[in-house]
Amino acid sequence: MHAYRSHTCATLTAANVGETVRLSGWVHRVRDHGGLLFIDLRDHYGITQIIADPDSPVFAELEKLRSEWCIRIDGTVMARDEKLINKTIPTGEVEVFIRDLEVLGKSEELPLMVFGDQEYPEETRLKYRYLDLRREAMQDNMKLRSDVVTSMRKRMWAKDFREYQTPIITASSPEGARDFLVPSRQHPGKFYALPQAPQQFKQLMMVAGFDKYFQIAPCFRDEDPRADRSPTDFYQLDLEMSFVTQQDVFDTLQPVLQGVFEEFGKGRKVDDVWPQISYKDAALWYGTDKPDLRNPIKMQVVSEHFRGSGFAIFASLLENAGTEIRAIPAPKGGSRKFCDRMNKFAQGEGLPGMGYIFWRKQSADSIAQERGITVKDVNAMVKAGEIVLGNEAAGPLAKNIGPERTEAIRQQLGLEVGDAAFFLGGKPKAFESVAGRARTAIGDELGLTDKDRFAFAWIVDFPIYEADEETGKIDFEHNPFSMPQGGMDALLGDPLKVLGYQYDLACNGYELVSGAIRNHRPEIMFKAFEIAGYGKEEVEKRFGGLVNAFQYGAPPHGGCAAGVDRIVMLLADEANIREVVMFPMNQRAEDLMMNAPSDPTSDQLMELGLRLIPKDQ
Image 1 (tube, rainbow, N blue to C red):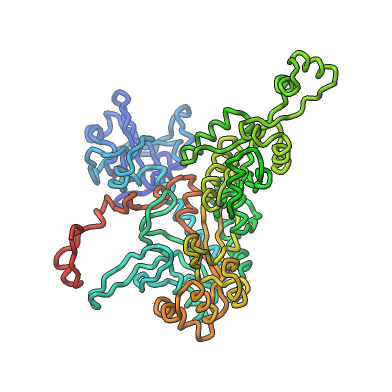
Image 2: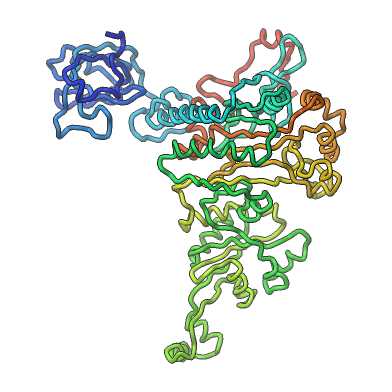
């Protein structure tokens, strides 16, 4: 028999009854039923129930066992009484009567329990991550991650891609985040960098004639942490192709990711139609470039209904250039109570509130006030058919702009009695993000968002340039390496109208993919940077590898990268990316388990030709 096990803790069934087996694993829990011991033995694969009575030769040793001791047992497989069968686990029909025991590793008192659903502070979980990872949910998440990566690889190979590895130590290259720098011992005073992405290398592969590349690539960025972003490193499905259009990239990636979500989505609906939405429309309709399309709410511009109206705040606001009023429809939100809750939400976002209108069935009281008659008279007239109760707009804003304007708003938004609308105004960039969060909150509060679904959308037509509001200086708003739509001709016109062949893929409110058709023509690249104030010499200095390569017959090429961590986070239905990363950092980019970052030794600093300067100097 094997030194440690003949079976795993998930494989024994009724077919093994009578066999002598050997199992190894961790003591999940111990139950003492008056002289009869029940031990749940757990390994990576599952749980098997072990039993012992005073007749067992190792009964006295078994009584000493505690949670999370690592043990090896020998015993005989027995069938459980029919009433005691546990149908929730694969081994639920059997149990093992223990005859021999070896303690492979004792456990000290646990800083966090593996069994059960207790909540522990994140700092505790990360410091003792090896214990945290023993928990069933974490084991499932890590297995899911491994399976997703395997599925991605298989699907990419099936599409005639080959996997190639790019360097981990390279030159510093600004890609929108801070680099992690690595000092060079052999070249004192100079530094390497950990790659923010394999971007330049994969483009150079296309120049080298490798038609289709992919890699499950590690990326390193010194960023501030968020729930959906690691502060140090992450993995992405990175791909690049030659002789392709933007649509070719979409057609290649959609079946790969759609297949992954269908395979691991646990029965949740996966949309097979992925709309293409311009960056401009995404900002208008959803207040974000990563919209959650499970929420059907679309915002609209309603400026004309407030221009010159009795609502002075919006009317005066619209007298300023570049301002507008947007409405957030709220189907079934037509109650003052709900509107008050959303006002409270807006105040939590730092706003004084949100203007609102809600539509309700016209009341006899409101008609009586309007006509100067009694409610009794109104009721009599309704009964006689002389008055038909319609709908009316309610709320302070409705009173200020009057019934004609409120009715025009209702019709534009397609709302009915029982619905509401909320309003925000100003320069769009100043309020879009808040409007987007309000849209999300409204969709969730009213139960409009379909939580049992994965909804995808390609966001396209990103503007390449933006102008500083104060100085008017033109700079890059998005990826400077994207091919401008219209090529060189587009760059000779108004730079603020230049759109790039750049795209993101959004799913359920998260950005999963970012990519572009690359600017592979040196003359177009130099012109694109010149518009933003970067001379030819600076471009050659900062991006010399690419610029030089593009002078030797570079093919048209494009690609993208899909965030593995975020994809697994969505599939695992987790809200924090650290739940699907094996050994993540904390919010301060610290590894509490390995004590990183750590102080270098004097010898290390001397060898690298470095000296640390105290902060107060």
